[in-house]
Structure formats: C-alpha cells, structure tokens
Amino acid sequence: MSKKTNKISASDFGREVEAPQENTFYFGKENFKWMLIGLAFIVGGFLLMMGPDANTVDGKLDPNSWNDDIFSIRRIRIAPLFVVIGFAIEVYAILKRK
Figure 1 (cartoon, rainbow, N blue to C red):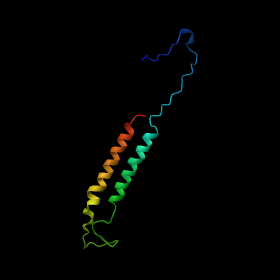
Figure 2 (figure 1 turned 30 degrees about the vertical axis):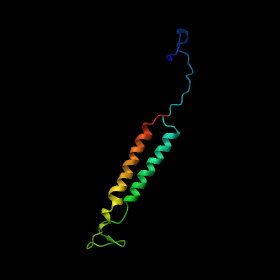
Figure 3 (figure 1 turned 90 degrees about the horizontal axis):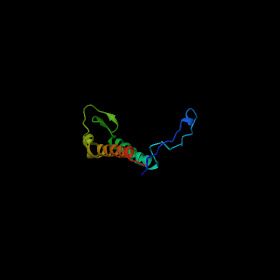
Figure 4 (figure 1 turned 120 degrees about the horizontal axis):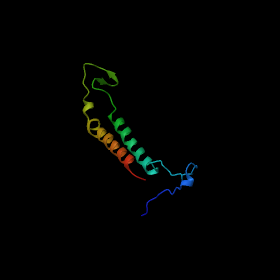
C-alpha cells in the first residue's frame, strides 16, 4: 500500500487547490437500519412496562386495595430486557463501520 501524499510545489503556494470531495458521513444505510431496530426494542420495552399502578382497580384509584400486577413477569423481567437489548443494538449500530 502506498501512502497518499499531496504533491505541492513552491509555485503552487497561495493558489487555491481543489481538494477531492470525500463522503465524510460516518453512518451508512446499515447503521440506520440497526438504529431503527434498536429504537423499536426500546419503545417496545417501555410499552410492555405500562399498566395500572399499585392502587388502581378497574381504572380508578382505590387506596384500600393492592394490585399485584405491578410485579408481573412482563413488567419486571421481559420489558427491561427489551430495553437493555435495544440499547445494546444502538451501541452496535453506532460502532459498526460501513
């Protein structure tokens, strides 16, 4: 491999030289695809976490009742796992080269 060098002589000093235009944008089509997949996982995880709070029964606040649904496997284990997987995919999408 040869090194790229700009050959400039003393007579060229002070003249405007047209530099070749390079595509300097880091992200490609694949990066954006992976970013959207990661975003979908994150949004899906937060949607899975949604639900009534501890003192809500049939959509109404009742301080005398307790709703055990806040400790469901969906809200405690699966939803945070989706969010973490989404963030891992986002890191992969950012670090992936073209």
